Length: 478
Figure 1 (spheres, rainbow, N blue to C red):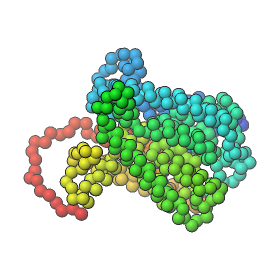
Figure 2: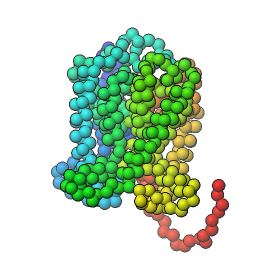
Figure 3: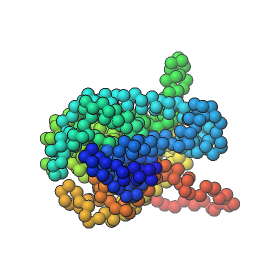
Figure 4: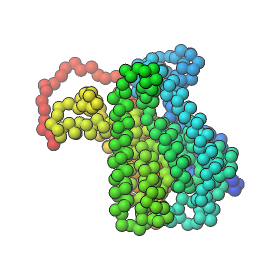
């Protein structure tokens, strides 16, 4: 895919006839970002790639979001009725995180069918919104003016889809695919959704679609079974602990992230920060922007605010949210919210003096806690090492809008964005060189697979049988 993007781009011209060239590493970076449903880019997709290149990126997003073998199971077995080999079946189990082959096939059929319907419907809605909703932020003069740290969502008028059906349709389809797969890519310039800062209908539909895509196949299937049982006047089906964990943890972390962001922004005394810039509108405009950004950190990667205008505590807070991620067995990255939920319940149980971890009248096993702690610890180690490595290799010529050197919090934010497959950026990604790009590619892939699956793929496949056990003895900790 990266070779196709590389070939396509070296022959691409924009509307002004300017020919663009990128190197193979940039093409590899875009392909990796698309396949991992991340959204980080080193170049402007809408400007550099033509329609064919954008279609390749959209295809990579779909394949990465669904999973190659999962899509094969859906197409050839669920729809066409073909038999599968053992390898394909086992890999689809790994991709979808299940142990039951028959139930996995049902889950794949229901979930992908539902996501296809959502994609088609949302493509139509997005197309209509782009076509009929005018935006005041498509202005050539303001877009080409020198960049500043102030409110500046302007892009050139060549990207304006208003009353342009062909462009609106292309935007609508691409944005639907990117949203449902939580990819964060866009082809509307170099400022994500900032030109649509006050287009609340577009933003509402966007976060509804990326939440649906981010909750994961098991949750979609579980909710479908619940709806079926209710329609049949049979309420025997109970939502699984996984579904409850996913939805409750997502709600709680979003509320905490929203509250902290509002606190950090409203308490800022810097006149150049987001809350203190009158250009961002009234209190309602700013609160909605914070709400959208908080939800977008969970893996979506769309931005209506320039992160350079947020305070440093907000940037760290959103980095933590991206580090946590969203649901397992979904397009989201990070350590996943169920991991942090298990660790939190264990801490809460310890504070209360309990011995067991309980949730929703169910007891969570110690092995699950050990796995959660291992995932958390390995992820912290990876984030720490790669942040330090990337920060140390930032070229001296890389500067912020003010001309200052990028702070380490920006580097942490980019690394967490790659690990959480979010795609939000402070502008640092486009400035990193070879080592930084290779590091981000590695982190994006690990984030897409997840720590357990990465270990399963690259680690030792067979466990060594224990011939003997040592004498048990505890040690003091803390």
